[in-house]
Image (cartoon, rainbow, N blue to C red; front, top):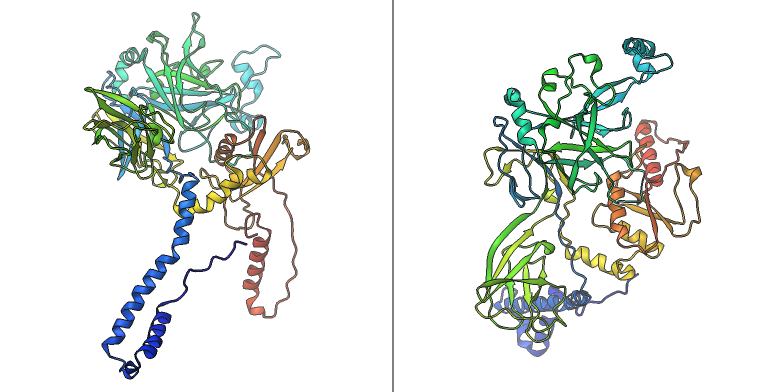
Length: 620
């Protein structure tokens, strides 16, 4: 229990009025017969109100001093976090020529929200279909009226050879899970299809695609219920181009991956693939006899034979580390997008030559890592560096500090805290990102405009933006800082792990339980205890009490908590973030009713009380 803090003066307006009247009665006895409506009472009320105002402000002094002390700790408020996501920008379907590049930092709009693209994009006119070769079980063949022997006879297999039946299955990105669980060869096949308007110019389309950098948007299936996460290292995805060998057989050529902001599909991002310069390697694999479509190494057959004839090229995606790869989204012509605005080439002030100069930027909630500040010297721009503290910097150091929340830039004193901008020197902002917050978590389909975009660019927004968080309020910081002082942002003790996980700002955790030395296995029986260096953390998301609906963390929650803790654990810690396994229980309760008319309501109230009592989250 905290120590009680008394008010410096707890008198209120009525107390002050009564005290003033009592003193007047003592010092001025002739005023004791004043009527209630006499003006002297107005003077008493006025001075009582003024005195109460002063007392109120005096009682705020401890609160002010507490905040001053917290500021001396130099633990800043958490800044807003920008939502991230993906958009796709297609080229016009009426021209075989590729349009101009969409440059890095292009501005998008979704209503009043400003957004910024990350990376360069070469839009193409291609559309995408994702297919897998889905295995067929014996029961599936029976339902189709086919047997394995029928297939063996049809394809002329030798005695002892067993056919491997499958059927092409189309997966719709953004609408359903992209899953390789029942895939025959653990691979996604990506059909890149030319538009209908260019059907007769397919060869020209392929020629223009040769040597192009193709952007593929990719996102994980983080909304699925998760089990365990113990590593976030980028995994290797294998991207291949389907082509033909000398004998006409299907072969797969590895593609150069120039960049992958998704970490191998572990987070939303874009994979940049370099297509071969030889357009003769692109094939549609359209079979005249459907019996041989998808046989062997060939891509599966498209349901629409007209679209199959317009396939410009086929890509294959595999993950040897995770043969049963699950993804949430795949899309062509993708680019990363941030729910932040971008400002470039701004003159924000002039140096005054005075110590401790402060310049206000035109925006608040600045992304500190993106701020590029220049000061004019001898007709040239000189880049200055941002530091956390000016104290102790050399007198000629070109440094400054930034208050990202308020948008203020602080310069040194020219003695022992960094250099002062010369008098009359222009201060320029080369670039910075600003904004962020939960408002940037935009659902699919809300981003519709490219600011000053080319008419040949067509925007698609099929995957939501996520991860946006509001800036921390003063009240939230006052609750967090005492906890911060206990663990200093390092997970060492069991209590540290629990508090840091439950207070993480990335993804809310309603309850976290730590089990030291617990090494999870494929099931509870295979788990081991007492393993040195292992820390297992069980987490639960917030949820309302409901019978039969225990809270289960998603894969995205497990990844977010693991990533947040991973930078705060000791070296050598083997960390696991897990979903608890609930054991079903049955409870029988005998209820004796006093009033038969309230039977249903009483039974329902008893059920609610039991659910609340057994609920794994507070206040259960």
